[in-house]
Each structure stands twice: as structure tokens, then as C-alpha cells.
Image (cartoon, rainbow, N blue to C red):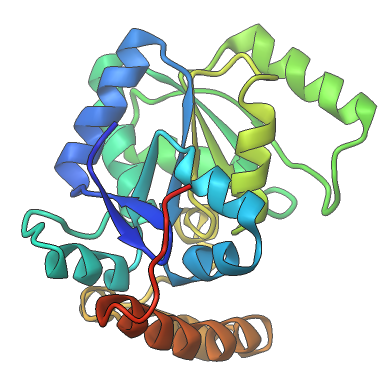
Length: 254
């Protein structure tokens, strides 16, 4: 377990892409089960109103700094080595490592056809990548038959890494519930990475990602879906985080 920075009661792992990849390689080789949450402002703010969700984030093997505010929080706490561990970048780095390691991958999530397209695009980029399968869930909780079908499919291939693309907080809740139910070693929730790497949605330019403006790019791209989230969460996060920095309120990692 890595060191963590307390951001409004959510423990954000002190990581960069290199140390995150090293941690993933270690648990995959050891066949040690766990799940990884890539966490930004949205996840932290969801945890403010749902204690159960906070416990899911804090129970993760890694809770990576997916958004630049998480990185800035780490640096303010003295962790200069901390940098963004962005879900789409992490996916590419893990896939590149897997060409040599032989780790097997399974893709769960996305709209109809997205997981299959994602697997095809990643195989084109990483020809030696072992894709064990894909599963596109319905836009609701799985019923009993679907759970058994998923369990059978996973059991047959036993993937080292199960990528989950359902968006926050659905993907984190899925991983926490299904980690003990599925014969997979590591689950990683990467949300929009499914859409980005399948080519379904365009990514923000790198300069916007690095400057903390990716949210604005995504808002302009999908205003109807994201406006409520960003306009509700971002100002509240800033107020609460400065309150934490000033010592006006203490948050516990429970």
C-alpha cells in the first residue's frame, strides 16, 4: 500500500505513472487481488455525500491522482514526486508492459460495441497484447443470469487485469462488489478511457490535460451530460479543500 494524501477524507495514493505501473506489475505477478480507482474531483465529491462510496475509494489497492487538483494537493503536502496518473495513459502504459509480461486483459463496460472496438484498437497498437475477452453490460444492475454468465466467462479465461469502463461512481461500486465474485486478479476502473481509446470520443489536448483544464474541454464536448456535474462539484471542491488547508474542518480517512 502506497502513502496517501488526505483530500477531503479520500486517501489519494502518492504516485506517478512509473510508480503506479511498478505497483501494478507487483500485484499481477503475485496474483494478489485488488482494485484500482482513478480518482479526480468528481470521485472525491461523490464521497462527501456517500460514506459507503468513501469507504470504497479508501479500500482500493490504489486510488490514483487522476485529476490535476489531486496532484496539486499532493505537492502542497510535500510530495514533489507526485504527478497525474490519468486513466487513459495508465491503460496504455499497462498494455505496453503486458506485451513483455504476458498479462491477460478483459474489458468490461462501455456502450454497445465499444469494449470490442477498444480491444481491436489496443491490439493494433500492441500486437502482442493478450485480450481474454469483453463484456458489454446493460445500463442497469446485472440480473442473476447475467452475473452467472459474466462469472463463467471470466472463470474460463482468468484475466490478470479486468478493465472497467462504467464512469464514476458506478465502476468503483462494481469493482468493490464483484472483486470477490470474479476470477480476475486486478480490476482497474478507467471510465472515459474506453471511449477515448476506441475513438468514440476525442481527448483534450495535452496542454489542457496538464494545466487542469481538461474538464472545460469535456464540458464543451458534452455540455448536456457534464454541465450539472462540473458546475456543482468544482466550486464546492475548491471551497471545501481550502477549508481543509486552513484547518477549518478536519477530514478522516475512515
